[in-house]
Image 1 (spheres, rainbow, N blue to C red):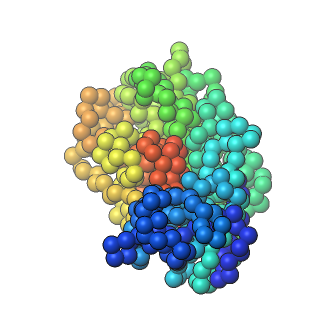
Image 2 (image 1 turned 90 degrees about the horizontal axis):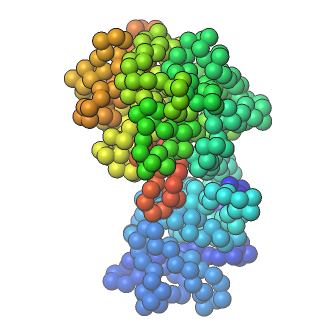
Length: 483
């Protein structure tokens, strides 16, 4: 991940390696915004289009390199601006510097362009020599965008890239201990963060039976990481709980090879919670944030959980493990139980939890469940940053799918596929504690099993592979609470 210098002013730099302008439709023909001398016929011949993800390079009559990016309308939305600029950042990241001349009439529009470009300029460092060539993005705009605005864009983009890098890292290079080490190093580098790590012995000693149980089948032991950002004067407390299965074989419900290949991504929730608290602390937002990273490998061995085993979660509830491949909800049970002990104002858990979410919502929408207060907070934050969530219900009748004859509840009902995403939501709800008034704490559950890994072609600022989805929503949630 390369650091990109972002800037904005009303004055062109003229030293940029390429100029970026928008292509849209006016009347019956194509035009550029602003007009830089390309006729409608020339634009058509170049293959330019007024559609998102259309990016064309060409040399202008002035001898400069131009990047033409599509916009469907002359009055684009913030999401369209972010998407269009993101496509440029992604496709033209081999150009050393870009000067955007896409018209922006407000600070919000200027931020959307810079953010899109910064989010798009990403490449996984496959080798030490792999890097994005793009080092500078300048936006020519009349909007009075501040340095603080620009710094915020850079911090959030850096965190999003951080999620993508972690999720892309092979499982033999990022197992629970190494992930925990990264959290310790991050806390050491940032004075406003505190960190605590539980290893397998401490997990058992302190009652984290679910994380310990899932991780007991691997020679690489599980970890629970607690990161705390607590600025002076903060009156609100946001708790983040992230699923961190660094590799998932399915355990004794072993997956077929085709279903196992992408399972290094099963720690995307923990990566998102981790990078979210780093971003919030770097932004210096006046809100307390605690992140719980629930880390384990779900492996097959003589010591692995067997179907029918019973384990005890941090809140004392016993769980019959009917499906060892429904292990994500088990580690999250301990994380949610621990987060509840502090009685935060809002708990948000994030996980690549169910294949059912992919079936129901595809690979661009995140499933959102929880209490009314939690759902509304996350919907508001997601809308503000242009990420897609869909509120799913928790029907009372589906709770019966978690009944067990030998424990407080089972982790799944084997053979019943009805409402799998919703049943998982019910399971997690059992481990969200109560507030002082006796009612359930405000809580939101984000199932990112679909959008966390973009298996289709890249689009806008979203690459193929790990996306960093919901990172910006979590940061915006903290921002909203800090107000």
